[in-house]
Image 1: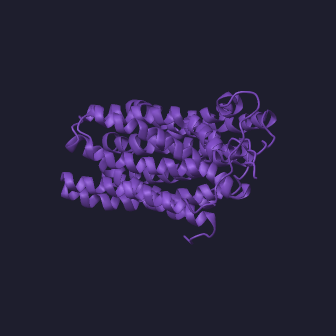
Image 2: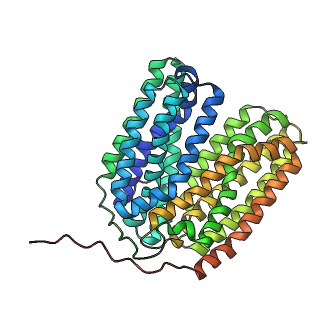
Image 3: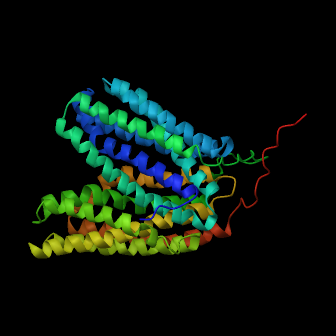
Length: 409
């Protein structure tokens, strides 16, 4: 992968640094909380779900703050707050101290995520925004894989100091990312609208319909991360090492092909067509997974590998579709809150996915896989008419007046 130039270079390097830390925390965070921070397994799961809910609820309001206060400033403030909050995890001794730190941290996470979308919209030409998102997603997979590998050292040592080094390392990556991104040009603040609601994204019904459909499609991440490993382990005769092979295949495909899969999705209708392809590809993947249950030995492995390859193709199309639609439907003065609202669908989908996917796929078996696949196909097929509805009803089409310049003597 060739390193780009201009603002995208800074975004890519910062993303790589930051996701190295994210990979370390993703691999070691739950173990640290349960082994050395005084939380039970049940408390850890409940606390993580609670903070995910806070992040989801705060997404659109924090996007509004980014639009009004300046997206780059909010992004940098969010990263610095995350660095401080992450380092403070070293002080956690109970579920309550964890929540005291993690809840504000979730708000900071929502702020920097929404602001990053607005920064991309402000720093990159409109026809390059989806390409930028695709490039950053490829880099994200590299960073998380590298961070997980670094976390393996701490996990092997399995002591409190080793976990603390991982936590502090994660905190440092937030600070380094903030330093790198501070070199980007500021994104101009948008003026407050003279009339009407402030959180226009949450009143934009066609856009919210897109968010709901995108959230349904987003549950496929939970299928791959939770339901498929359980399916392989408990409902097929495939060897358990195949789970690792499929995960590695998925990560490698995202790194290699996400940018290519994003071609043609730079505007909403192209994104909608990609979402439709993703829905039908997910139906095919679910059918292959269902067939692997009654199969035996080599046939089982072949069906699972084929399903995973079709699945990652759908994942690439789905990711690109969301970027093209969310950027294309956002008014020029509200990219922050629209990116925050767009994130709600994916966050909700990922919260519901483990329960839905395990109940249908692992619980019901083959018929459950087909029900999931049909739901994905319907959601994908509904995306083009919903996007056309949104394009016919864009209520916010004019650029706002810039904030007045300060008076000079």
